[in-house]
Image (cartoon, rainbow, N blue to C red; front, side, top):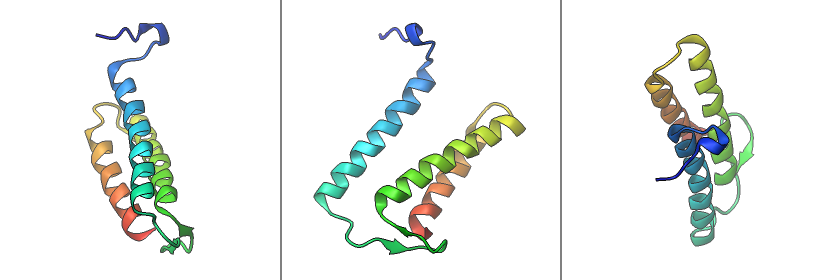
Length: 94
């Protein structure tokens, strides 16, 4: 279908970046459709908006995946489960 070899990408790498860009776009549409209002104070004592929590989730998930690769290697299904739980926790309590 598409040749990704010019950048040494694999389909999982492309899917990862497509997910990142689409989640940012969906967050923008969600904010446009229903503005988040005032920031809320979470358990860390930070005032965060939905966009801040998305950024914290993406950054934390990247570290979870890197840690999983360093300690456990592949497959990455365990890191996926941990990252989803982490994302839910961030949006719920941070």
